[in-house]
Image 1 (cartoon, rainbow, N blue to C red):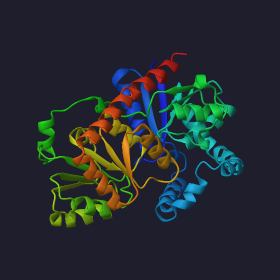
Image 2 (cartoon, helix red, strand yellow; image 1 turned 90 degrees about the vertical axis):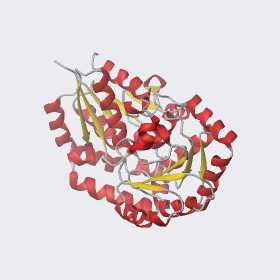
Image 3 (cartoon, one colour; image 1 turned 90 degrees about the horizontal axis):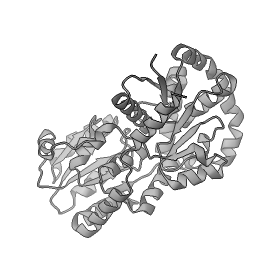
Image 4 (spheres, rainbow, N blue to C red; image 1 turned 120 degrees about the vertical axis):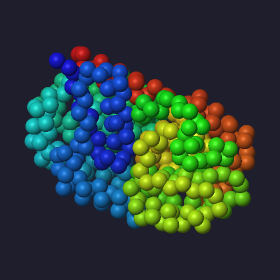
Length: 373
C-alpha cells in the first residue's frame, strides 16, 4: 500500500500554492509510488468564507495597507484572536475529520498558517501522532505559525530559526532548507530557443516586471519610467490576474520606446527568468526564491506590509537586491544596474553564493521519511 501525503495551501493565485505545487511535483518526480493530494484548505472546508476573506484581504492591502501592517504579527492581536481561532477550528473540524478519515494521510504538509493551525487542533482531538510539517514561504515567520503540534518547521534563513526558537519552538524541529520551488528551476533550456519562443532579441538586456500573481503595485508607472530610460533594452511585463492592467498595457505598448511584451499569467516563469537580465518585482517569498535560483539580480518595490517588508529586509541585508521607494526610483536603479557592470556582477555573485537550489528535494526527503515511521 502506497504512502499518502496531504498538502494544504490557500488560494491558487498565491505563493502558498506555488510552494505546494513544488512539493507535490518533487515528490512525484522522486517518489512516484507516493500518493499526493493537494488542496486549497479554506476553499475545501468553507468556500463561501474563503472568497469573502480573500477579497477582504486584497481590498485591505490595496486601500489601507497601514491597517494590515498593524494587524500583521501583532502579539496583542494574536492573543485576542486565540478564542476566535479555536471556534473557527472547531467549526471546520467536522469536514476536516471527514477528509482525514476518507484519505487517511500518513503526513500532512501546510504551506500557509491557517491550515497549519487547523491540523494542529485536529491532532489534539483525533490523531496526536499524525506528522505535521509547516513549510514557510517567506523569509521570516509570524506569530500565527506558532503551534505546539507541528513536528517540523521548514524555514529559509537562520533569522527565521532564531525567531521560532525564541518563541519556544525546539531547535530540533526547525530545518533551514529554504523555500520550495518547482523542479523546472533546476533545468537549463537552450537560450537561443527561448529568445525565439518569446519573440525577444538575444543581443538586448531583458527587464522583467512583475507584481505577483495579482499584478499589484504601481506597475503602470514603473513601466512608464523604465521606458523613458535612454538605454538599449527590452521589457517583459507579467500582469497576473490583473486583467485591467493587462488591457491597459496591451493598448499602450505601441507607444512605448522599447519593445514591451505583455503576458497575463505565465506558466513557465523559470524559462523567462533564465534569459532575463534584471527582475523588477514585489518581494514575495516564492518569486524572489525563484529569481535567486536563477541567479537573477532584483530591484524590489512596494512590499506588502508585514511578510513582504520582512522579505525585503532579508534580501537587502544579504545584498541580493536593490530597493526602490518610488516608481521613478525603480527606473533609476534599473539604469544603475544596466550601466554599472561591477555592481551588477557583485549582486549576481552574492545571489549565487547564498542560493539554496535543492530546497524542494531536502523538504520532500524529510516529508517522505516521515511516512515510513
